[in-house]
Length: 123
Image (cartoon, rainbow, N blue to C red; front, top):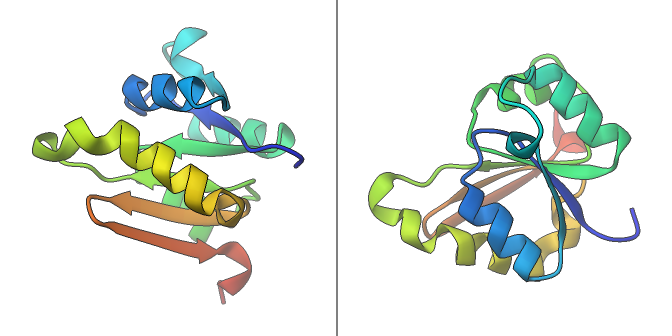
């Protein structure tokens, strides 16, 4: 992967898509082309296209950890309603500061907390 590209599933707050695009990142937003997608197909598409998947759907954790589906990386966004205002900037800051670490990792982004776990660290 020469640049950091993203695939945002339908659950991803579109403000994140706009913020990353404004910061110069390539973001393919599933919601712009379909209203119904299948998680496994999305994670496989992201891997094929070498895009880090952006989601708010915890099912992707199951796909990565239990089913051990290959991925180019997943960022699981866990932002409650009262903190959503800061989400777009938090995502841009994460990507700018730790972008390369997101590739091939499962990352959880919460207000004030980031956990990056490499798939290669799994048992």
